[in-house]
Image (cartoon, rainbow, N blue to C red):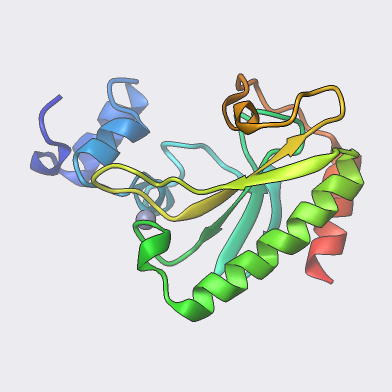
Length: 169
Ligand SMILES: [Zn+2]
């Protein structure tokens, strides 16, 4: 794949729709996949509103579309930051307070034994986000929980509503 920056916005959209280009290709070309997705009708990741837990003018918290565990969630800033090293102190404080709150809610709602937190955002371009991955009692403790097999998201409306209600209070 050539550098996608040589293509127009519409051409990139068509390449994504045809399955020839994915998030990693945008990242490799120095284009933020998250911002591109937002500016182009969610062409890359699809509409996440049915998985949204909490949203305000600065942040969004949502259940991920290809989770590694039931209750696997992510929190990201609306504003573009490449990774955690770029964020200002106030954003850092706010997003970690949100993460703490959501970790407790996931643990309580899904009955996990613990919730792991990670942020990577590697490569030429990415969009800062934090991942929260539950670890259940039937799973062994340890870093392997960060790379559990992904599966397709299945909606649990009841749990989602609990998370939504408690996250906004
Ligand atoms: Zn971005």
